[in-house]
Image 1 (cartoon, helix red, strand yellow):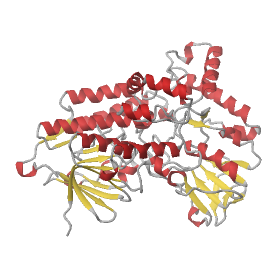
Image 2: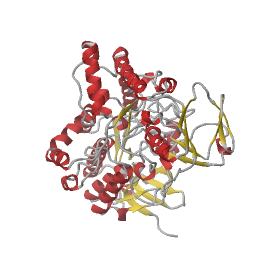
Image 3: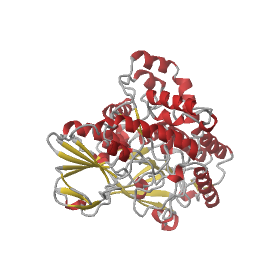
Image 4: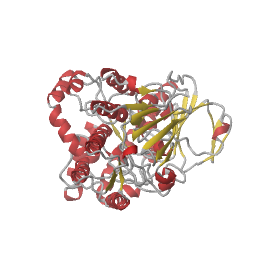
Length: 541
């Protein structure tokens, strides 16, 4: 029987988080192995190949900061990079830093068990292959487990079904086809205009209308790129404080005239992008102020969409602007002016059945050749809970999180020693530039491991009391905002039966970074740190 391999660390996932974690651990002189389910690096950017897939953070910001040579030499082509360019960037990083030899592809991890006798994690792949490690790092992604719509009879549909989060590598040609799209969140808003250009007919089944802001994307001019790169150090420093370099207002919408508000909304609309939601500093805490920006967007939708009834259905009315992920689009609302596009408002005419060849609503039957499900992910917890993870005394993580994820700092959870989660629930994660959040967590985790190693300590885990206090702190922070007013995937509302807990931490990443650093500076206050007996304190190879 082949001897089971032992590593200092096993990392699950080879996206932005896994690659950076691997590079840092290797620089520390630790042995590390990455297991990746896909046949290549990229994480979410490997799987999300749907037409129109694009980042909503500008290219020059959505990139690593750990290498000045990398950030100066890599040339971005667009203001908002599309999926193929982002994937090429990640592949370049893997090659440039010689990371591939430490990554095992086409390997999905099915289980991980903490062995209290050895103080090691036993990690098992679906193939049955297993390995051991001192530190287990979940770099499995916040948005990486696609969710098909919970529609009775969808399995009876004999046409092609695609999910935007698991798109065929070879692409899809919808020319001449009758296509349906379910979902109008970020991926739906990106894919719908592109499918409309190919399909003979497109029916959009809208469950919930969402706010979207024009991207005004375009080529990234060389002079713009060079000017940014000359100031990269200061840009990166500021990003570590605010997450993404938006233009934050120091004024409240409630304290300026209606004319000033309207002018500022128009200025930001014309500029485009997520920066729009930062027009005033009270928009996420004052419902009356939020109503003013929501009304502005609804007015723009009615200007763009020619059919008044369609425009009205596209206007969100059930949540404040920004409490669901704000979307950024290229020609989304204009798409509904095309003669081959039809909007079906499922709040008015719900789906009653799915047959072999059609979707039947309370009003009409729609014959389809293909169905695109832009129905999102089991966010923040799905990729972690898809693995059978058992900590001390065989405790199953899924049981501990049965009423919602419970972490300390969004990084560790009680009863699961030496298991780190990158951008997990309880951290800013999806509310900031993900690469900034990833780099902070990787740095913090590596500093923590170095602290343990330098003191010959073996295990660290979240203390129960500190974890409970942190979960309460995260909930209280969200309660001070308008976020809980929306049934969003931030709350797990897109997953039937998932506990309604607001998962991201709404504090700016600068404040969060300070909280994390203060805890580390106090000897990892709130964590339980232990030293095993000598026979269990051997270095892994």
